[in-house]
Amino acid sequence: IEARQVSRELGPDPDAMKALAAALAASKEPALVVGPGVDRAQAVDLMMKVAEKTRAAVWISPFSARCSFPERHPQFAGFLHASPAQLSDALRAHDLVVVIGAPAFTFHVEGDAPIFDGTSAIFQITDDATAAAVTPRGTSIIATMKPALTTLLELLPESRRAMPTGRKLPLAPGATDPIGVEYLLHMLSSAMPRDAVLVEEAPSHRPAMHKFMPMRGQDSFYTMASGGLGYALPASVGMALGRPGVRTVCLIGDGSAMYSIQALWTAAQRKLPLTVVVINNSGYGAMRSFSQVMQVRNVPGLELPGIDFVQLAQGLGCDAVRVSHPEQLAPALKRGLALDGVSLIEVIVDTAVPLLYAEKS
Image 1 (cartoon, rainbow, N blue to C red):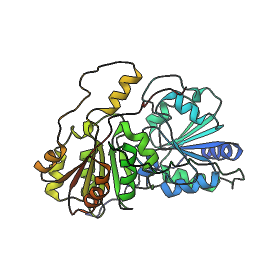
Image 2 (image 1 turned 120 degrees about the vertical axis):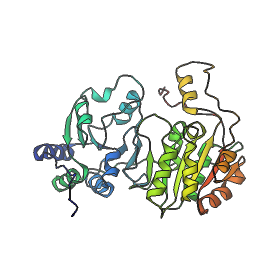
Image 3 (image 1 turned 180 degrees about the vertical axis):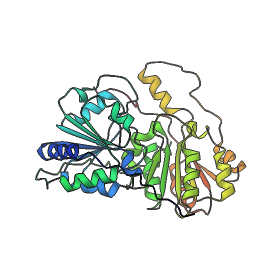
Image 4 (image 1 turned 90 degrees about the horizontal axis):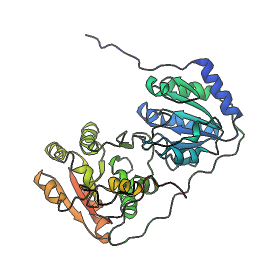
């Protein structure tokens, strides 16, 4: 039986796209907010061409589960916060905000969102009708990414506005004892093969990851699309099964790892090209942060002492090593990333966590 061909592409409304192109041409300070739909559609290269033609600043949407724009690109402005006030503050200077491949917006905490007060015009391109329906204001265009971005690229005039100033990456952090998470992330980023895929679930350390592990773009990064835990370890096993020719790296917190640690057994049995880096700060760092923001003390169940991830991994058939001091980190990463099969590197880090939703003073 001959296989049928089914196209999933959905073209945009021509008049709506003309209105969007006109708004971008007239804007003095546009921003593109890029979400996971772009990477999912294999449209990152198209997204780059649109950004470069518009000369707009490019932000990543809150809770983006993929990398839809190269994070070293000179137009890359940074990551939008999942707090209404902080997101609005980041976009305040832009007279036009175009959300592409993402909801407008996903928030993790409540609060007023001045971005919707009418000061900035808002357009949205999404393949999710539900996301379009719940957008509070502006124009939503329902279409898949490739035809929408191709149409926009054809309609856009060449812009004469000055190129925006992208974010500046911080200097490389120095080694500390106990190991700082920033140093771990910098060293991991430097050690990973260029074509490696990162699957991440370390929410309390994501702001540091954004600074010290810039992703390259298409098919380079995956994480959960919400605040739910337990995704990354089995997802990284699935990723390694689907891409046996490249190294998959799972970056995961100790609390998250305990949700589905048995996934290591499948990886070991299949001899998958997988390296698991466990950031062990002896507890649920994100919940520690929330308890500080909410001014709640002595919350039970946030500490996770006495878990030996090396023995857990070895018991499930994996090679495993513990790193407790900074001088051990580079050789452990080099060995683990080159190992034929599954490796786990448990890194004991400073237990301090950032305030994830603290308002700016």
